[in-house]
View 1 (tube, rainbow, N blue to C red):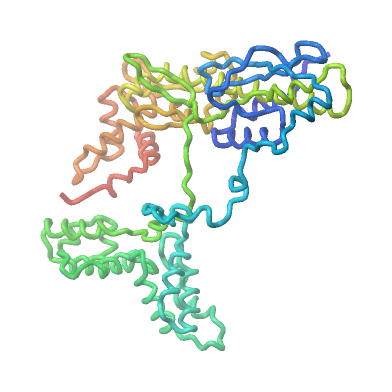
View 2: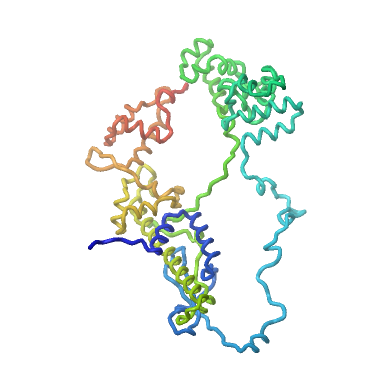
Length: 494
């Protein structure tokens, strides 16, 4: 004898829907609507009765089950509509010669001219409807096509553009590029370098550089000649770029024979340049986040509600449900019965998903009210076990609910996992969230003296003075996760 847990198809579907993001769930719902004729969208303003299509005998009235997926009301709504029994002659007499349609030809078969602007559309923008993200290579090739150039030089230019990475730098040496051409073309190194100089005049400024110094120098050369400290800045990026990277300002002032204020202005000019010019060309498609939960404050209470626009409301089609007969074992009736059952399972899985999401989001808001009122520094420690215990579910279920689910708050949109963090002990015996510690570190670094930036040991000491016991290595880990450079790289001239 033994015990075994079997995953029924209904349970598998509920778990799969639970871990989907809002955008993936919308796609899943659309696929279900297309494959199951029993499912349909419930349009706004439609009301239904509360009767079951399968509750009566074989000639029972059709009904519909509806789910309001925004979960202001998570109950099923069912309706019924009576079916008329007409003789064949009466039915034919009632059919008009021209049946009305709910769509027009243009709605389904759109011609290419249908998306073009009208004559009085002055605000129409071609790029907003045609742009799909442009790579740096395509941007450079577009400029190359506009430049007058011989066939050989154009071949060299295309090869050079292919060797430019997404940051805008030339990855291969000119010798390697020159050696890759067909010997019969008789292309020499000076020809390749001449074409490279032409590409370096393309946009974005600094593209095609072989190193950081050349990249900054190309950008300086495109600035107006009247720019203050232009000559000194060019000398700095050409001869002393290594000293600038190591922030050895005293050595820079001695070698360039400059005062501190003069060097500071030159460095400000250099820092206004872009060390990664290729990053200006965005090649990836934008990714949108649709919040699943909306949190707002009403008087002194925080209210939690599911996003009403995120998921369409579904119901069982009342007309098709009325065609199902209980005692009929024909193939058509069996198919419709199975589709009706799957539609009910799908609606119930959506209801279960939204109920679980609502419970978890409510508990998170209840636990993290300090964050909503005061920000990251008031974030409390929270782990999956705390929420699982509060809602009576397993931790794996909470993990699925909080993955790729987002909450819209007055402070911004956050993934539900953002509200979970480990804890660090305090001097008073309490606990402090790691998220709160990161916020404090960011605040301390933002207020530090840039001439003497805070080291990790100093930050650990300041945290200990506030009662937070954190090791230096932990501070370094938190600082790196925030993208903050070490103190040696944060040093600035005032």
